[in-house]
Image 1 (cartoon, rainbow, N blue to C red):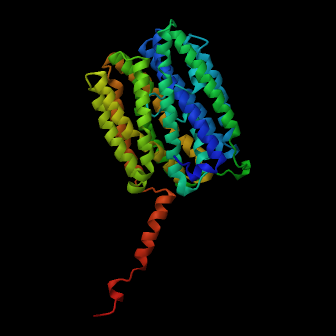
Image 2: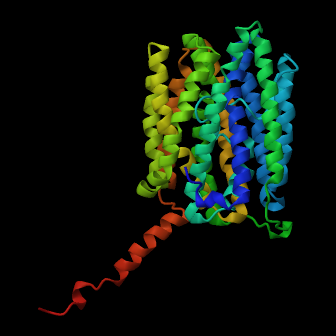
Image 3: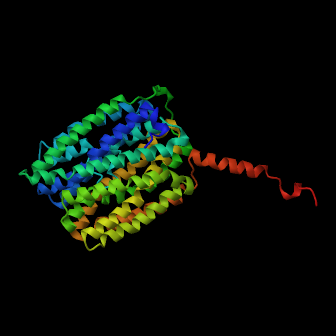
Length: 429
């Protein structure tokens, strides 16, 4: 496969791609390992949800800090600090079984919260830094292709990571306890985090003095407000899935790391297709319409997955749902960067995503509470409702916004129409 022109001669994008790939491999197997590890230690469902909530709140604090400082002082240095924390936080999981310390390590590591397919597309709390760095390293005309390309790379890496998730079952079959087998994976995850840190050190950013920072414009603040509203609901849906989905498969059908690692490997491999098709769908439908339609279909499939009578059927519905849902991910990321002025991209990325992080941090506790008190299928049923609400809000609040490439594509048509003579100027006969 030929290397795209936007990547071939762009060293900065190459390093950012490397950061994404390394993080996605680790996320691919840690998103499977973390929930099963907590269950193997004997902690309750509600305790697991509490740990996820604490981890989500910690991630939100990192995101907020990066958003407040990134536009003014640079995005690279805080991203390096978070990468350092990930190295030690991931290793910390292998060193203790104490719940309080595990909660702290979960906050520091920033791994393990987004499960299944799409884990490779997860930026974690780094997104207010990495998304603007990516957008600033490419032309507007290439931005959709760049974000889609990053998602494809993440999907391939996530596939590798999901395949690695079968290693604990292999180790267990050779005499390791489950806990010891999972500990091995945390050391592997820490090694990937260290490699990601080294790649992040190679990323370059144009120096901009602090005096160049200015408060976002009124238009940007308006977009930020509308994105924040939609993301509150989106976060509630996201938090019901991720590691709760892994836990749900485990409790509902008895699926372990081997079955789930295989399922997520297939899902991540298939997710390359929607990522490749995302730029074409955005050009054909427009970014907002493409995101809305894919989310509506995915919401319906989420409810159907909860009704599946067997692991095999549920897994099949899951595979279809994931492909439909993931097509919107690079489109959403590119859209936010496109409609935001460059000087404010870190702030908008952080503050628009912060409501989603806060609500997704709360929803695992809510989801696990309803799993115990109502039905084991609560995360999928509630997640489908919130996902549908997000799709409808997204269209209602953002349908009139268009990124530069959509405005540029519409301009020649409008200009041509303006130059056509009307009927009153035509000669008679």
